[in-house]
Image (cartoon, rainbow, N blue to C red; front, side, top):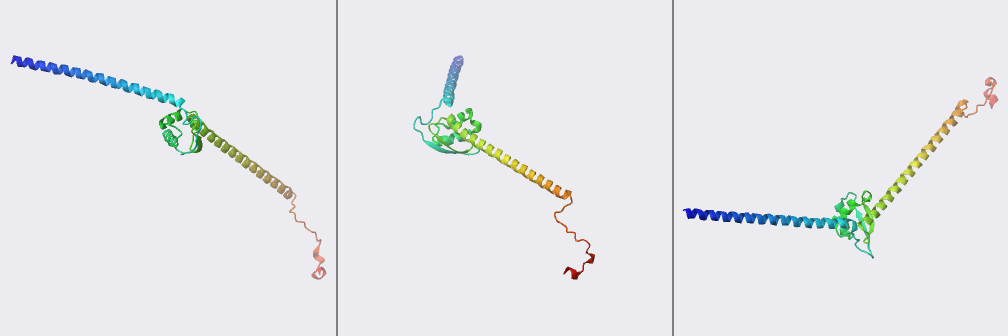
Length: 196
């Protein structure tokens, strides 16, 4: 019995030792996998970060002009997918990041634009923004012109009304109604026969 008990203890120790070794190996493998994922993720993040500011246009010399219609309510990812489908960018996600980093982002609005494959993302955003800034300035100038015309018309109408009121005041001030009355004198001596 004692021998059997010793064998059981020995088997238990072997299994325990084997379990500890396997446990350690699994922990080391898990750490290696985590480190590899971090390295790979850092590489992708660096690549994207670098490309946000240095991405080359689709064509370097001979470009193709493409008409793009951007919807009024769009997200950065929608814009990236649209530009990628039109052949203006290689990566929709990258263009979305470039959009968020662009100084022209506020002036990129929905509409139809003609862009070129020789343009970088920043140049495309700048071209779109310039069109929208010009439209906004033209609308503002038209609004100011319309306002000035309305003010001039209101002023002219007020002057005409004031002049009309002053002319009426001159005529009514003397009691003259504009009709001349002829004084016939005393008509008591006149009869119907003498008038004929």
